[in-house]
Length: 411
Image (cartoon, rainbow, N blue to C red; front, side, top):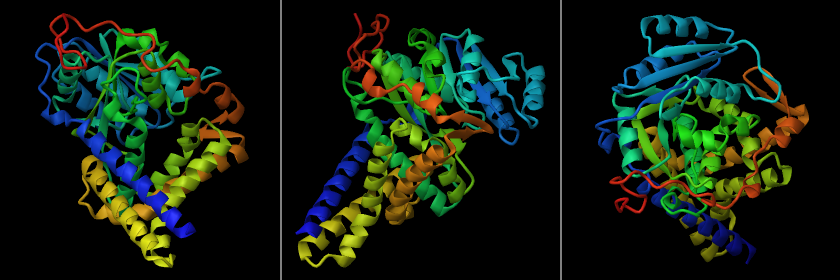
């Protein structure tokens, strides 16, 4: 009886995740298929960089290659100890559209990246601001397509899921498993409907109207947020700013980490922040991930009843399908990644446990060589439960003639 109940729970959970993956896929159109904006407004790209010497030149050059007449790129060298600053200065000497801001100190009460984003945003003059990272590479035309999508739908914020470049099966499986759980949390299918739970924010590509960014307080509201990209999306959504998300595919690409183990260790830094530094919630979420990963194969092998084994087998099959589909969509996988979903789901649970344990044991988080005390991070956390309901503050209608979120033309 207990094994049957557990198998039914696992099957129900994976069925829900499968439906969420399918709905997310339908609600996330491909950026490459969107028509470019015929008359794009001025755009400013903010690129916070710290020790990005191996990647930053390719990233910045890909931004400067965008066909946008009003483009400016603000690269912020945040206390780098490598050649990042020198590379940026050389690129700026070649192209006047690039401005380089060198930061030599971190003010009290800020995380480094968030302070760099704020410092970059202060220099921006564009109508739209793109927040991205120093290792993200853009295909020609990517920003014009993104603007076309956002402006045609009257959006104030557009996120793009990047192609997660991964060299091996283990690495692709891990990043795809992370993407599958993140898609269920973001609820992309809810974005077109005001007042629903869905929201989105992605550090590789957060394109936001400058007036919307200023209206929510910018990165000053996020000064101590480790997951600032996600919380920026949450702030905008709660203010009533219309949001959308696209599948960046090859238009927006990034290598998260080099290998499975570095990918898992890299996530240890911010996994505890996703549960707002609450140990009980971390234990609950980690235990759930471990059950979703290890439960179905264990129940399939060990359950005495036929019904329990059948439900466990169905849950296992669903988990394989979810990861296979997600890997194809976000990491260019071939489907074989799905076979590793039990191990990858369990790995995500262990990463969350490790993140919580490391932060509690150290009394804080180490990020890019800087230590941030846990008490300060907790005090500076923007808690979702403390924000007003989604869309409570409203947002101005799009200009006449443009499409609303419901597809009808604005009066």
